[in-house]
Length: 90
Image 1 (cartoon, rainbow, N blue to C red):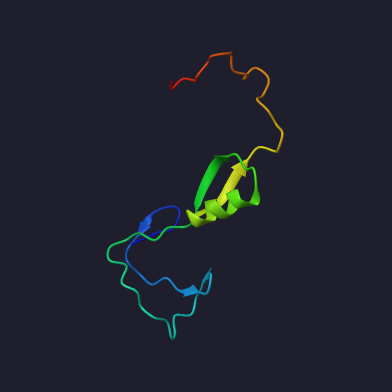
Image 2: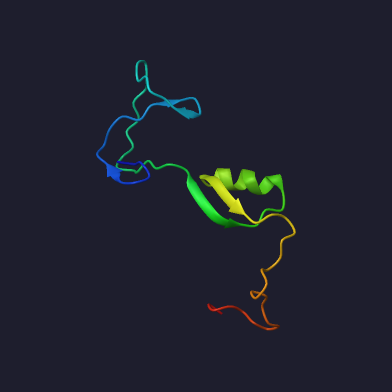
């Protein structure tokens, strides 16, 4: 099955051309996905980056989009934690 970002679609053909999704299936090799689900890259909406290596690690785990605060930006006013505060899930 293929998840296109909105819904699961019936089994079908997805053309992979190198590192891109292609359009021409001629000469393609068929791969039996064995009931697996093909989906677009993952989004991590809260990351803390300290080096370019962090981006490589995200890619290795299927994350193609990552959102991070600008470097050096601390807690927003009114959101600073009290000493000893461990958050709502502690």
